[in-house]
Amino acid sequence: MHTETIRIPVAPGVEIAADVAGRRGAPTVVLGHGGGQTRHSWDKAEHQLADAGYFAINYDLRGHGDSDWSPDGDYAVTTRAQDLMAVAAQGSEPLALVGASLGGITALMAACMGLEPAALVLVDIVPKMSPTGVAKIRGFMTANPDGFASLEEAADAISAYYPERPRPKDLSGLNKNLRLHGDGRYRWHWDQRMMTDARADPKHMLEMLDAADWTDRIPTLLVRGMKSDIVTEEGVADLRRRIPHLEIADIRGAGHMVAGDRNDEFNAAVIDFLQRVMPPCN
View 1 (cartoon, helix red, strand yellow):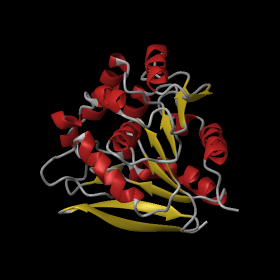
View 2 (view 1 turned 90 degrees about the horizontal axis):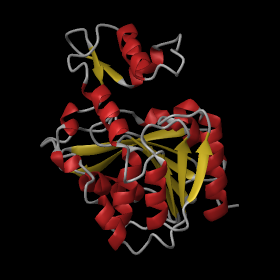
View 3 (view 1 turned 180 degrees about the vertical axis):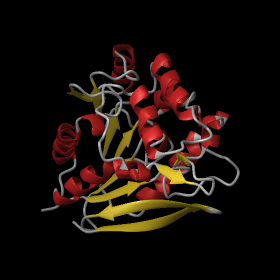
View 4 (view 1 turned 120 degrees about the horizontal axis):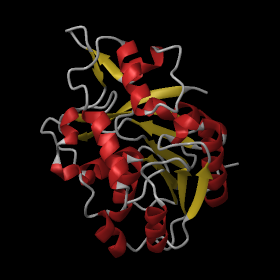
């Protein structure tokens, strides 16, 4: 499957990098990764969606991967939602949004701000997140501000954070998440300023969801890792109250990084849902 990389201007001095695959004009699926990741976490899903008949847009969130960093350090959730609207405009209707963690919060915010998809998939994220799980993620993302001396050192840090995931023997894939700087040290491929931007806090999300008029008509799927430290039963119940028709796909053996832990099961659950609620063109 051929993949094309495009750049999408979203604001003065800011372009978003995205990979697109599939036939233009087909129903569009936009893939948004989690905080600290890049679009490459969706590579397999992108190709499978294209093979299933969709036009897939797989983008790096502002401040991540090959997308530009905000010149003024603006990483507000509303700003990210506006970026997503510009990304979605590269495709065709009907449109589905698939977002993991930060990408899912961004998709929810975009829907509350007027972007109405035909389907919404939230990957291990709910507005009422576990404070303990959030603190754990923030701790990992703010650690090692001076970077790592080698890929091996970075892999050790990941293993300490996520000991249940097997440590890869081939570390070359980490080059997609790290930048080698002029001082010879590897640093994460994201802008650390987003961790201290108060505008990035989605504290108004619940009020916006309560005021939204789409929650009773847009098909919505929550894909939950059963070993998640972010999504709790309380958080699921809260989301179901706000989105009464919510569907849930439980992925056993997966943590917060559902797509990475159980990629094939995750992709199958998402594609099955989309084929039911937003069938691809014949």
